[in-house]
Length: 112
Image (cartoon, rainbow, N blue to C red; front, side, top):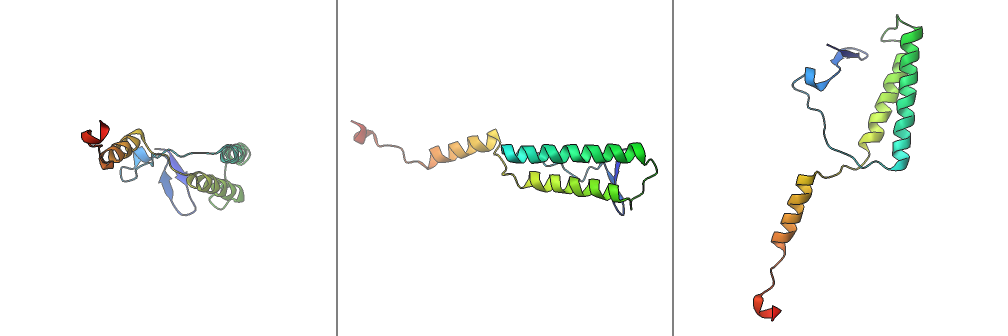
């Protein structure tokens, strides 16, 4: 089982390994600027994590570089969650049906 080490505990790396945790599956509308920010943060996380593992194989939870990686991950999550959610196709379809059913139907006598 893969784990992510936090300051005081270990957390399963995937939600599938922990049945009480459900991954959020909502899509989000990401602007070009936000996409660029997420990309830069992702590269910074990758660079620091690779450097941490390659040059410091005996790192601990108190390692400043590990805390920096965790901070960047937190910032990336915050930037992503600030993006507006998009509606699923089912939700869009239900909204259209609601609009159609609320709209009064024209009377046949007024059409002639």
